[in-house]
Length: 63
Image (tube, rainbow, N blue to C red; front, side):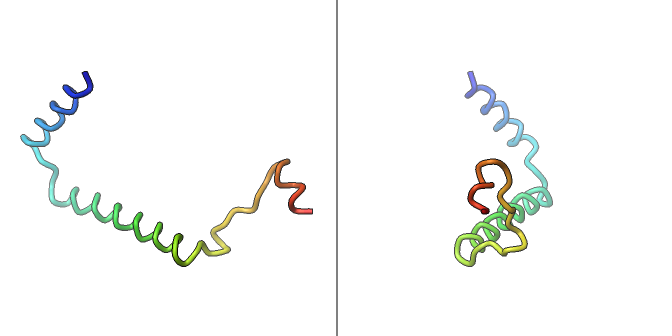
């Protein structure tokens, strides 16, 4: 019965669509995520943002 929930949500959106401000906010968050993912993929992640491995598994690798 999940399709009924989605139909009710679609009906609600049709009756009261999100404001232009909310649409801009969501789109800007999506664009920011795509930019961060693209930088990570093609440029690499900066050294200051990487975590040091911790735990018994990584202790042997650090020696």
